Amino acid sequence: MAEEEDDEQKADLLYEKVKKDLLADHILVTRFLMSFSVAISILQIVYATYWLLVLHSTSTQQEHLMISTMHYIRIFFSCYISYFYIEKIKCRQTATPIQNSITYLTFTLYTAFLFFNLNILSPSVEPLQVYVLVAYPVTDAF
Image (cartoon, rainbow, N blue to C red; front, top):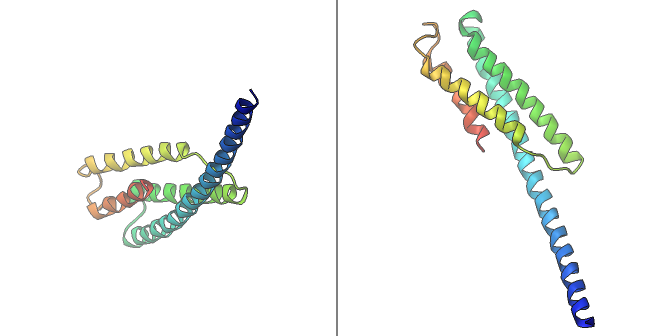
C-alpha cells in the first residue's frame, strides 16, 4: 500500500513537472509566433501604404475606390493585430488565432471576387492593382 501511494505521488509530481515544461514551451512558441506576426504586419502596412501612394498618384480615388478601401482595411487590421499581439507579449499571455481566421477568410473572399469580376471593374483599373492584393492573403496564411 505504501509503495502504491509513493508511486502515485511520484507520478503526480512527474505529471506536474511535464505540465509546467509544456506550458513554458507553449508560451515561448506563442511569443515567437506573435513577434513574427507583428513583423509581417509592419511589412504589410508599408506595402499597403506604398501601393496607396501609387494609386493616388496615377488616378482619381473614385476609379480605384474598392482597391483603395481594401488597402485601408489592411492597414487598420495590421495596426490592430500588432497592438493586440504586443500587449499580449508584454503580459506574457497567449492569443487565439480565431479572430484572425475570420478576417483572413473575408479578405480572401473579397480578393477572389475582385479576380472573378475584373471585367466589370472600371477600364482604368489595371489587373496589376488587383494582383497586388494577393500579397495579403498569402502573408496571412503564415
